[in-house]
Image (tube, rainbow, N blue to C red):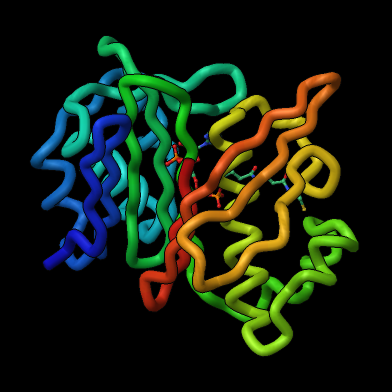
Length: 204
Ligand SMILES: CC(C)(COP(=O)(O)OP(=O)(O)OC[C@H]1O[C@@H](n2cnc3c(N)ncnc32)[C@H](O)[C@@H]1OP(=O)(O)O)[C@@H](O)C(=O)NCCC(=O)NCCS
């Protein structure tokens, strides 16, 4: 069953898909708009073409509309009302759609490389709150949370350390509290987190 996670709530719909098909399965099922067709034509790496197309397929299952990107690369629905975010990584594609408020989603494979960049994206306080016994999982989850918040905001030029502050959280919890700090804004958000086995899902 390729759908590894599916949520339909009153405020959003979400789907995470394990990619077991080849690219033609996804491309035959959807119609790309001109901007999407142009973007796709410029992707040469086969693995990225598959992930890219799978992410559009998954997004269309939630809301059947094309995507257009703004000046920061953030995707928006072409003709329907609502908010959308997509993510993909080796073997998985994910999307979230809401009619009510901006959304952000990330899926991250669990890998050790995250240790190398931990000091760059975490503040000292966040780093000190990592669970030493589940360090890799805690770091990956923190990275996923910040990427999801980054996509929710969508306008680049953010410091993961300064603008996105994760409050101490347990890996056994379903949420993490985040403070988004920018200029004089101070926005508190709840980010949903879940370990899906080989990937961590984070969304808001
Ligand atoms: C944009 C970014 C979040 C994408 O993340 P990624 O891990 O490369 O890829 P993901 O699969 O998770 O997400 C990709 C999707 O994000 C979406 N995206 C790109 N820019 C976006 C933006 N500004 N806002 C919202 N979504 C965006 C795109 O739809 C993209 O999919 P596509 O290329 O198929 O269209 C990432 O490249 C980035 O810039 N991160 C910030 C890095 C940073 O500032 N680090 C500093 C701390 S060390």
